[in-house]
Image 1: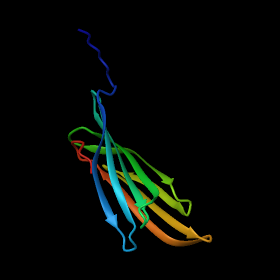
Image 2: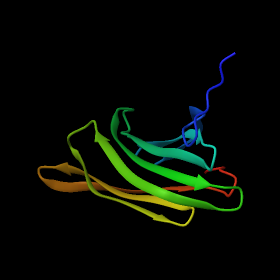
Image 3: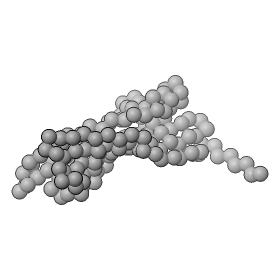
Length: 143
């Protein structure tokens, strides 16, 4: 029998998709939002890292872009705090550009606010605003 003590190190790191949903637009385009969670447990405290991504599809079902909010929360059972929030994006169709991607955190909440525009002949012809929010409870349940 071998015993290993790992103070202040991760004991578990499981990544799972915890939720997804679809928003439809009048022009036939749609956004699929996916939520992925990675839970890391330490001796002293618990940490949850969660990502929420929105995939935008044109009306012909081709993926045009993805925007993502990444957030890390610490929770103890009696409190939860967002310790980090970042945004990222990936463009699959060069007619689209992310013109704004702003992460913010407050208390137990992380927010990513995105503006993505489609251009034709150098002029914007469509704008999609997307806000992604992740909130963590005192017990580490995030949504």
